[in-house]
Amino acid sequence: MTTLRASLEEDLTARVQAGVSAIGLWRKKIDETGESATVEALLKSGLDVTTLSYAGGFSGSAGLQFREALEDGYDALFTAAACGARTLIISPGARARYTARHEFRLVTQAIRELSFVAEELDVQLAVMPRTERHAGRWTSLHTLEQALVLCDATGRKNVGVVYDTFYLAEDGDALSVAEQCAERIFVLQLSDTLTPGGAEYAQCVPGTGNLPIQDTIQCLFQNGFVGDIDVQIFSERLWKEDVSDSLVTCQRKVETLLRTSLMESSISVGVQ
Image 1 (cartoon, one colour):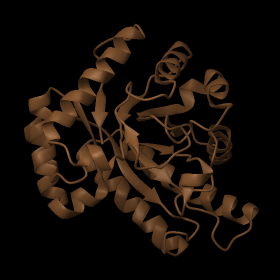
Image 2 (image 1 turned 180 degrees about the vertical axis):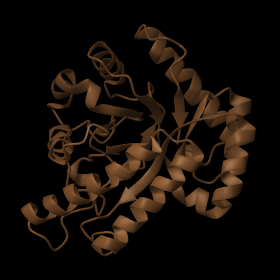
Image 3 (image 1 turned 120 degrees about the vertical axis):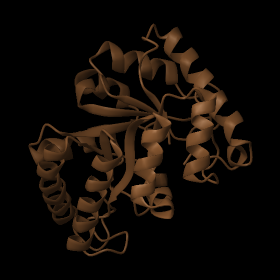
Image 4 (image 1 turned 90 degrees about the vertical axis):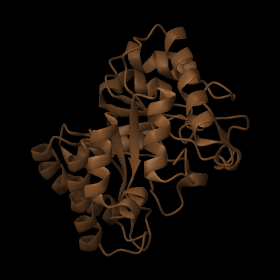
């Protein structure tokens, strides 16, 4: 999604040229390319695959009935496994017409069901909270703590969360919560912004805005985080730039952030 206007083929070529080690996949581009062709292209590229986005909408907010959304979740799981993705990102859906309690039960049931098949396929599930102003139909989970409560309710060890630096920027307790549960964070998703709390499509490359990216990286790794790092940037400005240039910039900035945080350079960094 960082390279929204590029095809999957262009994405893979540009990543290899830019020295990016991994890719976070978006289902829409796989649908456009075809799953078999995608798997073949990934193998040829030699890129590591961190995540697949998204499955979910179990509350009906995305226009699917519960069972339809669950079947779509199974399809996403099989796609993730075929592509070698370690984690399937879940946007469980907004409350829609349900009470909070009923919606919580539905979402918990769906993720728990999916988790058993995910375990067989060696794919993790990671629930993604979003700040309330940007949640839309995607989720009713607006804080890291709410996402962790849902994960705990499934009772499954292969269900964790995504820590997105943009969407959790307004969660004042996010870092203190992360200190206690860094091992439950499966994916650290990086993007930045010059205007915290501002427009979703005004994101920028990590390390070029005003979010505490450095503090977040240090906090998670010092407290047991062992997951993947993805860069996901929604930016009208970035989408107009050359794909290769965008990827080189992302790679260099994240490498600098990791070096400054005393991280090992061998960590897989994907760009969605």
